[in-house]
Length: 255
View 1 (spheres, rainbow, N blue to C red):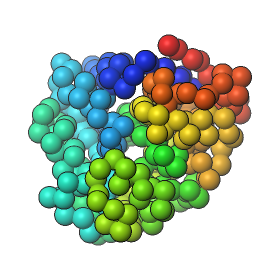
View 2: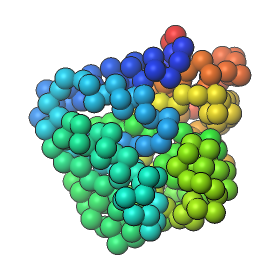
View 3: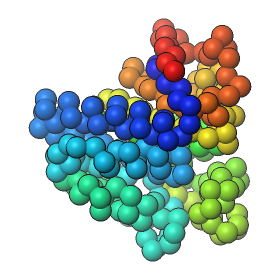
View 4: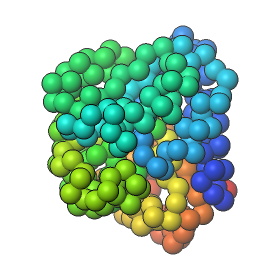
């Protein structure tokens, strides 16, 4: 596990985008293509803004979407399909883009495409309640499905309101289609970009606790190639002596 601490969210985004672009270029050079999973939300904005400016052959990149609300039209400001189209797809025009349409019926189609080949890199955010994708605590660590329909808890709903996607908690959909924890862990590499003070509690819990589905992001520490990009605000309160890597794994801390 690598922990990379930047002074602010913009610097974090630039450093993470450099790392992502290097991985994608290496994949394209080595195998002729790269497969990428993208997450969304306010915490991913600086990384995506820097990433779309990178020079690489985007026509060789196949993108997969992490999650989407159930029964939310793509025209809604909170739609993650809308988010990805406007901030990534329409800017770099990847070779293929597989979006979660927010319906249980769409799960089979995106699952089939996802499982054609291994995914080279997953950009996986961590929520205020330490969820990954929409796998709220207690997260299902056991299912081997690629995507499932999940119920959103109140902490997750409040985060969506605080970030400005919905007017109030009642307006947030009750369910979402989410990539599962197991499927996320199948990515060959995982990068998590987690800036801002509002994420400090989730970062501290993730780093200072052993694996538990009550803190879903703790499982990421078991991945053999996991990099956590944080800024000074989100890393505040973490003492290096309290960081608990997964059993048999170490960690490095870079500033």
